[in-house]
Structures are given as structure tokens and as C-alpha cells.
Amino acid sequence: MDHAKLHVISTGRQKPEQLAEIAGAIHPYIDAIHIREKSKTAIEIYRLVSLLTGNKVPLSKIIINDRLDVAYVSKVGGVQLAYHSIPADIVKIQFPSLRVGCSVHSIDEAHIAQEQGADYVIFGHVFPTQSKPGLVSKGLEQLATVSHSVTIPVFAIGGIKPLNVREVIEAGASGIAVMSGILEADNPLEAAKEYYQKLTSFN
Image (cartoon, rainbow, N blue to C red):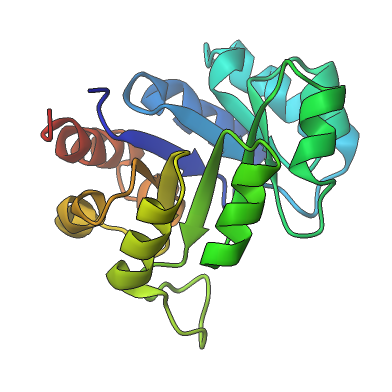
């Protein structure tokens, strides 16, 4: 069995050079780096991809949120779709080279993503998190229900720390997605290694 996967998602709060430097350091320990920069233009995201590859991050590990145009022309590994994005089935037909992930918040959304041909879903937020203040977290029970109701991988997001990685994976998740827990840690490389060691301890 493959080890549980570790996806890192940009926070939108770091300068491109800083994000690229961190990504270059941590990429051996992660499976994907998501560029989720809602305030950036297409050309800014395109340049950020160049910064990442300049720091030795493989294109295959780069996933761009929502911006299908940039994902395609920059030849990255995949695109992450939100509820407002072009549906996964259309993306799969028109851009077969891209891996397609969908961000989901319910069983129904996970089923739709699977039916449309998504390669995986990211489900959350599982635990309370500062990035979603005031929103009730989904919890491990809902994570387990979603994970066991679809056949594609389900990655958990939201408040996941090294201490609760085990219960997330035991609930059925195929991996985790982390934002500030790695990118805004005092030592991002050590944080990435810690998550990686937890995730690879299930083999």
C-alpha cells in the first residue's frame, strides 16, 4: 500500500519568493503543492510556477487551484476545482493531461465529484481551524462516512496537526492537506518532515 499522501496548500499570505523557497525545501517530503492564490492574476500564478520549478519543485507535484488556463499552459500536474469552477467532467474531457481534484464539504458533493471523474477529493474542514472562524467543523465521523462512500481518494483538510494524523487516516482518509501548519511553521522543513513521518508510519 502507498503511504498516506501529504498535500500542502498555499495560504495566500506569503511572498512568491518565500513560498517558492519553502516549497523547494519541503518537496521531497510532500506529494503535492497547491497554488491557491485567489488574489493573484493569471500571469502572477504563471510566474509563481516558474519560481517553484526554479527551486527544483517538479511540475508533476504542482497543482493550481481553479485557474485551469494557467494549469494547462504551465504543464503542471493538476488542477483543484472549487464549487464555482468548471465541472470536473468537462475538465477531464478537454484537458486529459491534468489530474483533477475537487474540494467538497458533503457526501453528496463527493459523490458528484466521483461521478464526474475527479481523481480525488479534499474534504473539510475536519477540525476547528483559524482559517474558517465561526464555521462548525465536520469531524472524524463525517470524514469516515465520506471516505467509505466513494472509491476515489479522500484527503482531509482543516486543523490537522501531527498529533491527530493517525485518527484522520484511521477514519479512512487517503492523506491530508495542510496550509499554515507547514508553510507558517517556525521551521517549515521540520514541520513537513514531522507530518511525513506520521503518514509513512502506517505501512
